Length: 429
Image 1 (cartoon, helix red, strand yellow):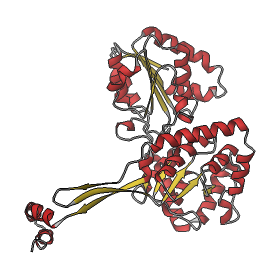
Image 2 (image 1 turned 180 degrees about the vertical axis):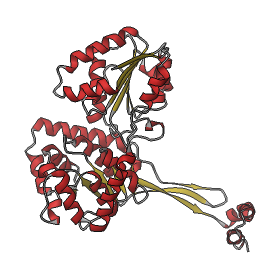
Image 3 (image 1 turned 90 degrees about the horizontal axis):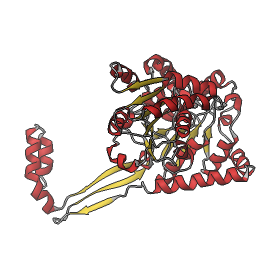
Image 4 (image 1 turned 45 degrees about the vertical axis):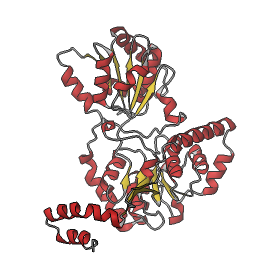
């Protein structure tokens, strides 16, 4: 695990490596992914069958077999352990309530001259959600992607998820039922993104695609952007923690490892103004690692992509974190709300000793689909507006166009667009 001080001579070079932590070699897989997408465009379900056979180890015998049966969803929900069902509902309700507060409103502004300006907010007709599968299944990702679409008022939600060996996680099935999903398909990877972007015999073309995935999914989303809208291009998971001497050493170690256990490419970065905290956390990480069922994955992540940075003070710690612009940022300091105004770039901010990142993954309410790899400098978390679009409204009165026509005509004439000028001036008579 990298341990450095901001005063070290080689700090700049080491820090540069951390800034590039989320870079995915998209170029290395672009041609492969483009071929997959082209096959979907040309051969549709026939190509899907071939891809599923190759990547998921089973071959659908008909178009209908791609569809996940809604009765299967209901059965999984009905037999769900009561406490697990209760937890699922609690998560749903909290996520729904939070995202309801994000809804923008349509508005009209009536000017004194009788003209009207405004904005009309409309949901997209159809949204495509990609829910990862394979090594693990993530029902929480379904809730986080489906609920904002539901709140936005999207009429049709289409889900794609990989099903290795034609097996589906029962909790994911239950979550599909809870969200009222009617169209969910056993398709994963770049093939799913291509199918959602261009449509096949029974997978409809969507307007927006959201949801996380591996480098093939991320590359596919980048390649189809423009044909459809996307939420973001997300890379490996990451956590950044700012801690002072008041922080609990065991909590810090566990929170850093909570991201490391995701996969070997995850990044866990602690920034502290205390040498003692740095030394003790490094030791405690080794103690906690031995207790984890995913020790091998977490160990590789923490050793190759983990870092502890010691700074002169907390202000410098925040400056460093703003440069890193991490997906998850924990402020494990005595007075987190004092630091909050200084934080500019982070996907989600977790305040204080009783707020581990994991609470945000499942049940706090804010979305856990977040920008990674420094993209929090310009991306926001997945939210209701990803499923909405805005239209401008303009209605000019006679008095209104009389007041604005000469200035508008002058600008059009200056740009050499005579018909533009005439379309305004012709309305003055």
